[in-house]
Image (cartoon, one colour):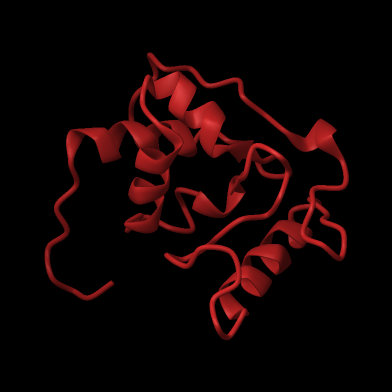
Length: 123
């Protein structure tokens, strides 16, 4: 992001408030976030792609519903360089979340969906 002013929509604010609730060492899914918001996984993905608060608001903690690591930093799955997905895997590994060689979540007990939709404020 540049130093220019960032405009956050009310929907993005709601997404980021819920996203900030995902504990370190856990991941959630686009589907879980969208269910809590009453929206769609694609809309959640769009908001995450524009997250100006990363890493404090941890968009890296969101994976696909099937447990696949998914995209990161605005790139879906493996960008041509593959660097963004590698970076996401490294960040999650430091938090104790492991994926197999195909990018699938190893321990589904790491999935979290305890969103408090009434909390609604960013950290």
